[in-house]
Image (cartoon, rainbow, N blue to C red):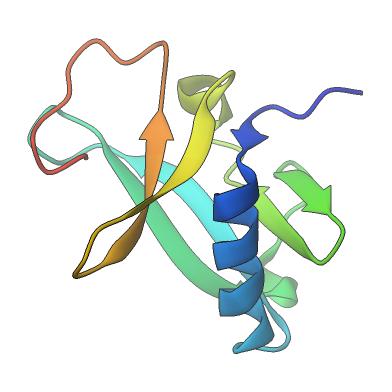
Length: 106
């Protein structure tokens, strides 16, 4: 079975480090109806008791990402990558279904 989204090796490594520093948590990703272009990607560290059976789980060797069930259609077929500059690292989405984006990446 193919995953709903693609996660680059750099993003997997970054997420795995975050999870290693937050035992018992998972990274939940979704889309909120706010932000400059009308939608914003949302990231939350949550305990496994907050996971629902309708959510999509993407697993790899030493990590996992949970896609919020209400957001799956908005990010289906997207790629999650890590953008690193001199000053910061952040997860960024390459979403082929996005109609609008803004400079802040939301």
